[in-house]
Image (cartoon, rainbow, N blue to C red):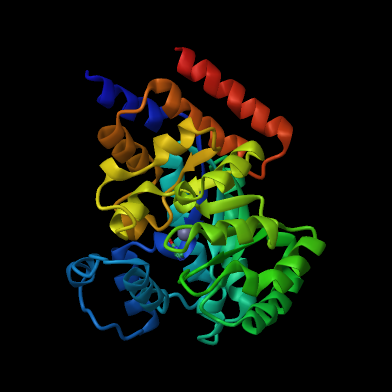
Length: 339
Ligand code: HPA
Ligand code: ZN
């Protein structure tokens, strides 16, 4: 077996985390068609094949247009449960033992679906996964940055009765021209309520948005963050403070942030001392779940075994698990990789 195949096998066997996953982005094409039939939702395509033919994106916005369109099939609490459960079964199959998932309530409440329907469906699956699949989780509410800060505040009010199920808030959707600074108010409310904060920054937007997310939103992690390469002094600061980056390699190539995986800076970021993790973002759209992301990185960039294990270990370090649980998993990882 060559070195690359061996490392792909190792990465797939290791217990892992996922820290950057939009649950709506795990809506597989078959499930889109099945839920459209079940809920009598009209779509501008009539088969899985026709839908898959549209998965050819030129940038973030071209993906988001299809992502929000497909989201319309999600209507009932059962739909949100089924979507989340299907993702958690993938986690089980890929040895993901802890996952922190995003959801986009505004893409549902704007269609008249109550916040509670969305959160109860997702939470129901997460709590069943803890008992039946031994998968732990956290849930992160993402505000859509292409909508107004006032809309985010209304969403925060809708979330308040369900805060026992929500561990953090994040910021996603179209990044360019929607800087983190717009959302300082709602992020402050979330922090005051004891929630963690994260934000997408430096995916398509400039490195300055990463700085704003750190300084103004006081985030615990940056989602994507790859454009930090453009600001060496910010990079040094984020490395010093060990603010994690949740990197999504297949997403970055599918959305043309990089022309090819050979150009992806993930190993360079790791070598510069950043706490980098590997995640799938929207696995139904970008060609795979976490193991496929490791495989793509290993095949294109030929990391060492130590680098692969560090990426996996960073996932636990960067998670919102308590320190004792993190230590238990990282000890297990050491045992695994010594075998
Ligand atoms: N970036 C921003 N918003 C998103 C993404 C992403 O990769 N996926 C789903 N919403
Ligand atoms: Zn994302």
